[in-house]
Structures are given as C-alpha cells and as structure tokens.
Length: 162
Image (cartoon, rainbow, N blue to C red; front, side, top):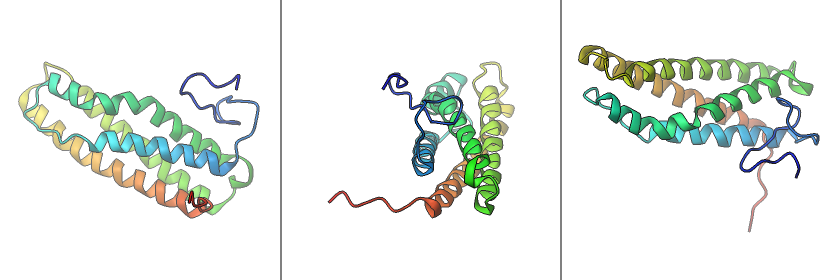
C-alpha cells in the first residue's frame, strides 16, 4: 500500500487519506479503537495533588503521547458525521454533539496538565488543578464511553472468529 507509512492508517475521504474508500463501519471502528486507547492511557494513572511537576510529566506521558491521534480521530468522526449518508441522520447529529463534548473535555485536561507540568505552580494551585483534572478525566471517560455505545449501535456485528 503506497499510502501506508508505518503505523499510520490513512482514512479515505478524511483529511486527504488514501485513494480507496474505506467503508463507514471501518472508519467508525478505527475511531473507537483509537479513542479507547486514549481513554485507557488516561485511566491508567491516579494523580495526587502532592505530585511535583516531574511526577506529573512521567505519569501523563502515555496519555499525552496519544493526544494527537485522539484529536485526529475526533476530527475524523466529525468528518464522517458531516459527509455522505450520515449528513442529515439524527444519530450522526447526536454523535457529533457527543464528539464536541469530548473535544471540550480533552481541552480541559490539556489546560490543566499545562499548569500541573510547570515546576513553578504553587502547592495550593497544584491541589486545585489536580481536582479539576480528576473531574475532567471522569467527564472525558464518560463521554468516550458514550461515543463507543453510539457507534456500537450502528456498527454491524463482527463475525465470529471461531
């Protein structure tokens, strides 16, 4: 495949990906898989308000490494909801609203991490931002689960591999 570079998966019709056309179901599966990985990395660590910036840096690295792909998949989801047969579908409109909520919660987490990763953040602010982070993390994980459930409603059942 000429358009496949390493572990990059071009999504046809989305952001200039490949010349072939991936079925809608495959696009949705890819999106859910990548968002699940982002959510898993976010859920892996239990932050403490007493953590110094270096500890936050180490603990959040697996999550931060998935941020770009997570944002890209949310963008792919927006494109998939706005094109073709889904453009005027009620389900797609609702999914798009949940996707927007995920983007907002992701932005909240990124802003909070920006403060927590700074060595000069005072302890009282670190404690407050940790609380904000925990709340935003919980909200994002819930929204990602909503996306998963909504997509599962539309995906055809996977054939058994037996």
